Image (cartoon, rainbow, N blue to C red):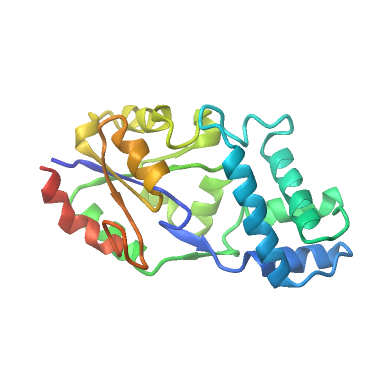
Length: 228
């Protein structure tokens, strides 16, 4: 019987609506006028670079010599380099860091609150397990979601990234449940599904555009009986 559901954050609970536009507006205030479309492409390329270089045994934010702020400062500099722009000032990176610590750049998916309501009504405990830095609780609070979760575990706090088993182990230990009593839901086949199943958690992949185990979070409640 499933007693708890853990959920990924980005692209599961919410998404960043306009990364290129957000970067363009902040950088413009610091003297760098760049098209949002060019910045959006550079952000995607820079994130692919850091993701390919990531070692799940070390959280990329906590392991950086400058912590998460240092990681994101370097990331913004790389984005500007890929966009063929001058190096941004540290103040631009600092403003972007604070901007993405609040709710404004994000959109909660419309299926999230109905799904969480239904799971809570069934007595299912809820937690978040995400590759994220220490700003995630602030983001969730700003979006009105933090109070719905018994625990919010970030890779920065645990020190490893999904799919490393230690972050999922930390989640089930926090909940005080055996892995078989927990279902993890996320959008990544590798980080979420393979990682969770590595410690015998049940897992489902969410793909709102099709191709996953779920097309909506509202399907989770009806799937719980399958894991009894």
